[in-house]
Image 1 (tube, rainbow, N blue to C red):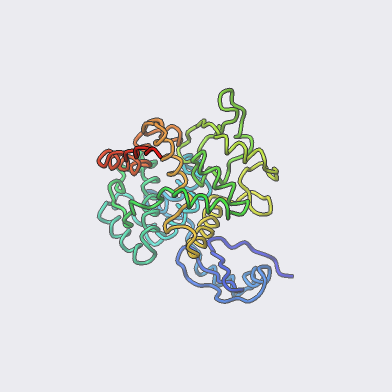
Image 2: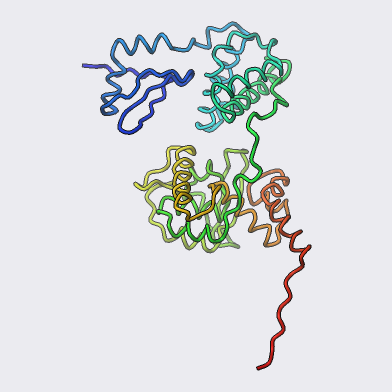
Length: 359
């Protein structure tokens, strides 16, 4: 009998009927091209030679690092810090992946960490991984350093002011055009149609869409139905009316779960990442067929929602409130293209109506 042993820090990736097993922290291949079932794979990982190979590559326990070193701080932050423990599971996983990459630096004293040394680490990470990973790693460090400063574990946060390695595309997450919305909503399978309707008419982020429940869909004395939800992103409680078209759509659904957005089998999404990836793959397939334009994203429906509010007369403060954001500048951020449209219309003037001719 083979006893299954849970091995932490491994990434198992299926590809073309075979499995590949990597050490998550280093990207090193432990098993390549394994043919068999997932159960067979776990049995293979439990064999003595695999356990030996795994143990050689194991990370050192952060608890063993001297006090006031990076490893010591990572252990405190990921096991004791209340702010970290309140993060979503997806964010925790992303932060830990960044810390895993830094394991070789865990012996570094905290007072030796400066902004120049962080730039060196960031630039090396860009070469070893990719720019977005490096930026997420720096975000994880900055978040940890901020909490450490507040508790007297560090004198300052050297990650503040470190520039992003990835240059953002200002046109990313653009507004969906009317014809793209019509095409997508007509072709969307039920699991994606629900996501589309929620994102378009209440503007929720994917993080909230993955966990929104029917209990959040409540009666309202003015708008008949509304949504009340506490968003994990900013810990902000929000209320937003449900548009009539959304109410009609939701009230016609058969409820298979406490969650509104579910997979094809009626089960809830595992997390935001699973939902986001599946939705993005579907949009990419539509784009390859030439059915929608390039650059369409789920977050673009949040932009579409905000743009519609702005065109209906809402100001930046109102748009931000409807988005569940505290800062009214976010209202301007999501609708800057609408402001530009208005300026162009003002420059050209509205087209004059043609005079009717008598027959």
